[in-house]
Length: 503
Ligand code: N01
Image 1: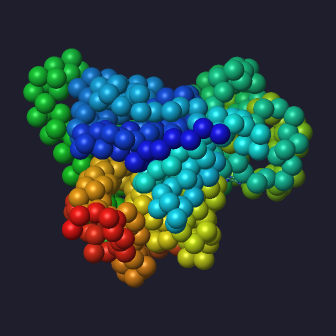
Image 2 (image 1 turned 180 degrees about the vertical axis):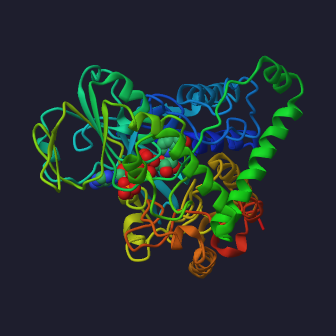
């Protein structure tokens, strides 16, 4: 077994892990390692390579404020370009040599006697029972794996018996032949609405299995003009202004999600017009019209989804799925539709991620056990009582339905750097958020959510856990989260100091 000692271990090399590395380096914290099971930087933008994968937040806002990209080719970026951007930033800020790729963290446990985290890793894709273990001892653990990293395979009767290929949207395999095949897509979320229009063009026949129709507004994507590119490069204020404009508009949507349904009415009108424009058949229009309040689930963006459903080689199936057979899918009405390939665009384990089982805190309980009764709870989306010296990026109650997660991540980066500075300057060895501070914080979150569309909008979404509580979302304006995380508020924490440190 090989052992390494570091001050900080960052697990995850997506937007948040990379951001943490850059900010730490810039602030003099250079004794760290980034661990990731993938082959390079990018996280979700490395893993989701399905056809049509693209971001539904405007490019100028979906990037680090400290690393604007005057070269974005389009107003909304596609996966390859975002993946490239993240890797360019890693090189530009010189943090690539800190990353250990192809490394799977199998367990991270707090050692009270060592006052450090013991992190076991194996080469990704190997059997942890027999693989060579490399261990890292770290004073601080930064969990930056993100909430959308563990694919959710649907628990449908008989699915394991299917004789063709089953492929999750986040584990796309380009070698699977789709041309001329009979294909089914299960799901109509953000991933499915991008996959279906692309796949429909290639296949002989496509069945789309819809459980809940989503609200979809047009996607105002276009290429940036040469003049815009020149301005972004030579007059950066123009790109900053574009970023600020999109940000302000999105915050207005946040107001409607959390305060006033009336503010969301125009969104619903636009979404209904999108259906009318995209679909000729009245019966099909009815099937795709959502039955819940706009905003309750993520508002999606597409110009291609409805026309794709209207194609002669595509069927929208709304009868519930009863079971999968070796050759197809049987719906509740007894109809069997034969297929060669099954694409499951069924989302991720967000509130029940297997990652939670791997992290073990001061009492010997895993994060999964700590969250068993009341769901995911933390303090400022970053620290969890009982898990000393561990900061989660994009932790509980930091998700957004309306704007750029990169803004939330950068807010947490302020908090992270101030946390590390505080610990270092005050000779602190152990930091654990006080239980009362955490409880009060979560009561405030739930109070703020109580009139929101996510709670009262009449839908079931991945924002809620098994108890029906919304534990994933930040309720309200993101600038309020930025304000909260500006400084590390050590008074909210139980701390232990190094007795040998000079007073
Ligand atoms: O997953 P989802 P996703 N039988 O959970 C259905 C981000 N993202 O991968 O709605 C039948 O939203 C499920 O049905 P229902 C973004 O944050 C961003 O699409 O629960 N159906 C739903 O239709 C997004 O929110 C971008 O009734 C089943 C679908 O599968 C998040 O990722 C692009 C089923 C899952 O939708 C997740 O999006 C892609 C079952 N057993 C992703 N189980 C952009 O920026 C699930 N479903 C554009």
